Image (cartoon, rainbow, N blue to C red; front, side, top):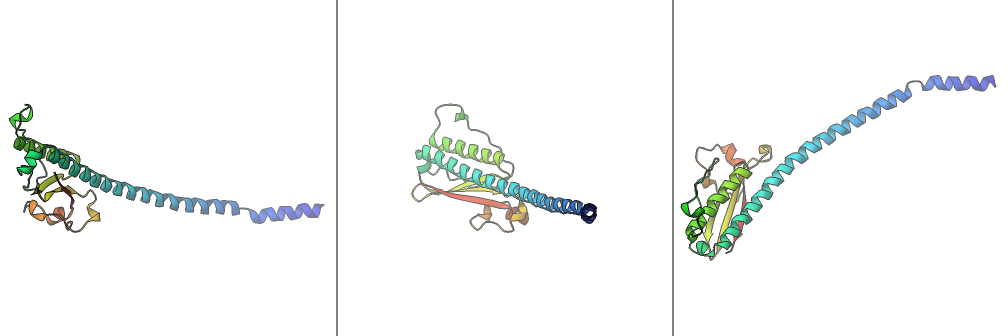
Length: 186
């Protein structure tokens, strides 16, 4: 019997420290896995912000489309065609009829465009919009916004009209601008 007890003792001596090495290896593997998950979370947040801006651009394109359809007389008269040069800080002054109930279709269109641009500018970085076209062929609504993660872009979107940007705007700022185009039929 003493012989069996001695064998057990020798086996235990050889096993000493092996459990600690296994624990250290598992902690190292877990640490690398957690670092990978942290990087994945950062990338997910970055892409979520980009997706949010694109979703807002879609909503604002639909918003002005609804405003155009609601004011058919103003749309037919061409009052919704709103070009202009991009402005990073947009402010508006409402016409006198904005608080009264008797606005002409032209004044309603002006208020709609101003309200639309002001809302975009406060909701999205670099929010701006233009409307072109006519009531026969449809209005082309373009919503411009600055890409939140400039490392994802290097050139201007192919559908964007670069003539709306001021000449003082840097090339890298122009390249970071994105546009969302919607065609609206009144």
